[in-house]
Image 1: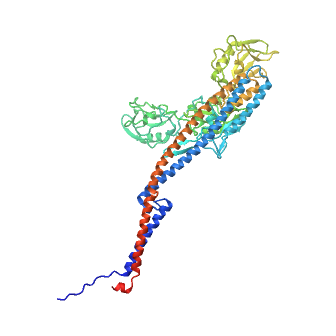
Image 2: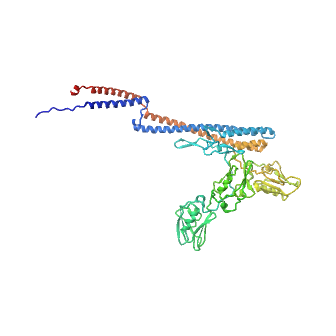
Length: 640
């Protein structure tokens, strides 16, 4: 047996070279990475450097970015509220100045010239208030609400109208909170429209087109649709009304069921079920449902063969599509005479010729040029008319018929309480004796006391009773509004009304107007006036020019109310600013903690990095030395 020499494997030079280059490249890559960390101060430069830390860091950065947005919103909101508070502060000072002027110009010692000079100053204050109302900040009208790109207060005739929005702008101040950074300009300047509320129930009759959404149901809680059971004493059927949308749908579905001879129809403001002579009609709800109850046709026990089921009133509401012929459950409504609306010094005659539904009627009023807004009231039972303009009183009267009364929008009627007249200004009555006297054309005179009167009709009755057939007849105007005194006597005197015993009743009732022929057409003393800063400043200016102490006092009280409202709003603004400052501090504190955590994840630990840098340099040097020896081998070195 012979021994063969062992052949040992050799490592090729190419492999050794490749291995050395790989080691050098790896060390250089790590060295470059650590150099970047040292130079940038960031340990996390690319997500691939540390995917888990990178994911957390990106989420933290997103949180910081969101908070920065919230901080920006807070700074901007606080700045705008600061401008708002400054404007309100200036308005408060202006209102105080106006009250001081009012107080200084009361009494007989003040001359007309002095009052006219004071009126000129008040007119200047009026213009300053207009400027404050249209204050801009960074191109935004601060009192304009979400219509902040156009001036919110505009001149309309002799008054000022708010054309901005009461919906104030809000902004996000954290993930779950939107806060307003504006105030309601209408509230700040008192621009909440005065209203002639509906005094007539215009609830219409049902029609087939009446939507079930537009009826209140028997409990005024709407109609809860489901199934009902209709029977005639012999047979019954379950009728599904869940898909009905109108009254006609209900009628058609009941009639299609064919329960005996039972048929449904409309009857005024409810529905009627009629049957053949032998039908004993019953209608029941199913399983706790309320459909039959809400539709007013519930009858658990029959009323006898042939007895119809006359449904209850299901309270149909007024809608824009309601036919005018259906108003007041079909009762007569005078729509041929029209009505008169007076705004400021202008009177507009409104015609309803060609109107067929409620929307047509509303359009006729709203497009009349009177500057008012007619709309259906919230209850859906009538129409109301709004006066949106401060300083421009509005009245609604008749045009020779009963249209305004029938529609329930006449602003002064015989049932109007005396306490409502002249914007609620108290009427001073005589402590004893008569409140005024009336002189007839024949020169005779009689006295009238209205001490027990509550309404305009009471005053009319008191005048007619006091005259006792002496030739004077008191009535209410058939055109416009006001008390009318007619004199049937003749002679050299003029029909006049004279105050007595320091009573203000004659003037407050509008009976001091000039006589026309043998008639006094009393003034409309129930103007619908939108209260507010501009209204009260205009009232004060006009009262000073007229030397009317009572109106000066009334205007001063209105200005005091305006000032109190401003003080309240400024308090709300201050509270909102304080809340914003608190939120800013909280976000800044949260940012400190978040930045600290983010720093731990992404910032370079220089001690560790420099140590690692030095280690990598030594490793690189060793790799280079090793590689040089491998790459510099001779043929003899390789053969050995």
